[in-house]
Image (cartoon, rainbow, N blue to C red; front, top):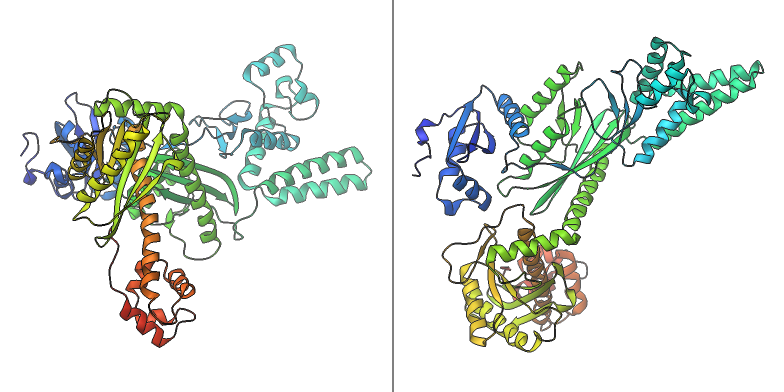
Length: 614
């Protein structure tokens, strides 16, 4: 056992929060557990059994301590508090994808001011939003000032108007009550601001009805100037209400949260629905930890959403977060502390309008994730940094401006294929992608040797004609595949090309003949680049393999009377893949339109039960 690892029996079995420290007493990671002994024991197993990020954290740490708490709720609260306070490098950190604008009313000031804000502060200011565009805030504010002429000027402008005893233009045109020159008292101006906040909070239609009645009354007494004023105010409030369409007819207050994730990142989106209307949308992205499942990420996301604001009493989510009951209790406590009533319920809706809206929010999360990953792949600075980091990590003489990635795929050891994808300046070059058929091979390493031999032979002819010569060959696999690829390049006599393998399970990089892998930082652009190349090669190989499976299935069934290309296509369309056709029973095949019982029996007897091994 490593010297600093605590003895298992010394660790309590109570709920609690633990912290890993490095040699400089910096907190590396904060986590919570229902049972501290069970959770911490997972960190102290053989390093070979740990995920890459966990292994790096444990190998960097020099001690761990823990704090026992009474309940899972206390553990949840303490964990979140410490993550925000210490920002440990191995904990995930959510990033807001934009600096969303808010409509803010500074109710903490003597003369409240309505304005656009980018940051939220706990100073008595009331915030509405977030809005997706700044112009939407300004447009809404401009319309509201026609009805609720609260101050909207800067403090310096307000003080200047008081000194000169002359209001600004907004005061002259009726969009400010001009408290600066005493047209209204402090209390009267605060009442206007409170009405402003009240309408934005509820958008009560009775306000519009009241303006309609006042307009008609003014018209009846021939006060057409006042009637026109009430008409304009009514139109302004109607325009604001129409901008937030009703999405839930029962006028619920609910936050609906969507989630999307890839291997490297996750995104969370939220719709704030108040009185049945969407009042604001927002999304966050995060680079995920390999050892965290989506329930843990969603839990952290919800904690981040309500870090500064109390939640509504109802939250809809696509699946249950970790510690669901404790999380609900924590959010309920925040509501009580904010002076609000109602227990917070976290639900996974199963039917109705809320399910439909959840699907829309999930689409927004998927779009935020795609935009985040697209930005990383198209950002020239990020791509340049990735190539430079890859050069330094692998000890290459120069940055690999052109890298090629090879993957092997097969069907139960047969129909072996190889795929080649090419990246230049960190971007895929689709025109240079290639497929390779392998007649026979004992295993993946022999197949890799054959494919790399053929590619290396071609590179001897092509490297002088390409914009960038290929300088790095990335293979999908660990040390056996890397050694096979290196041996192939050496046998062909190709020089100037380095070989590295990316092992899928731990995302570690292996160099030929090395006993230990190269570990890239989990959030590095270099790791993102090689993972993207590996995944693209795998996708390209699988697509080719599937086309071969279809041809193989067609060939096998062609010998049966009455089974032509049309019926083969119907089978694949019905079951989704050739492999699924092979695994189907007689009864299942009989359900395919155009195929009877006898034909189904002949198909099943003709097909083997091979399955894909990609």
